[in-house]
Length: 102
Image (cartoon, rainbow, N blue to C red):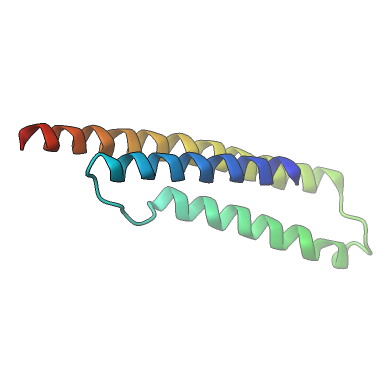
């Protein structure tokens, strides 16, 4: 679970820093992309499932189930981080080009 929290923290820090750079370069802030929404859904459903699963298994969650859900969440966070970084990079370049044209 600490892995997920750390990845989520790193992803949000990257997005925050890239957002600040974009705003400083004259770009505009945008809403969440589809991959961010899917990632949020995966992480949220995994956490809810891991929270309620002990009720189904008399307090003992199978290790394979935990490891699988944590791995799926971690992979989705990493992929989403790369996709958002790429998107922010393109938006920052676009804002710089627009500023040079003025």
